[in-house]
Image 1: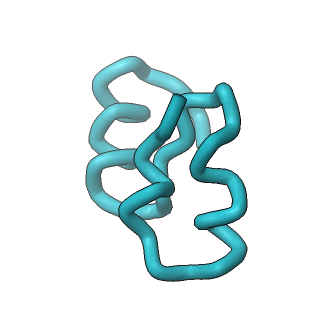
Image 2: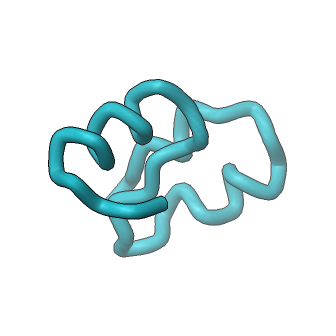
Length: 41
């Protein structure tokens, strides 16, 4: 299972690209989803 981190360039983030977690890199997509779902970050 690959998550959104597979598209990142950071070696740290890339090492978590196969984690079974729906990770979002920090950015507008993550912030928009948090606002839409009324979830804290």
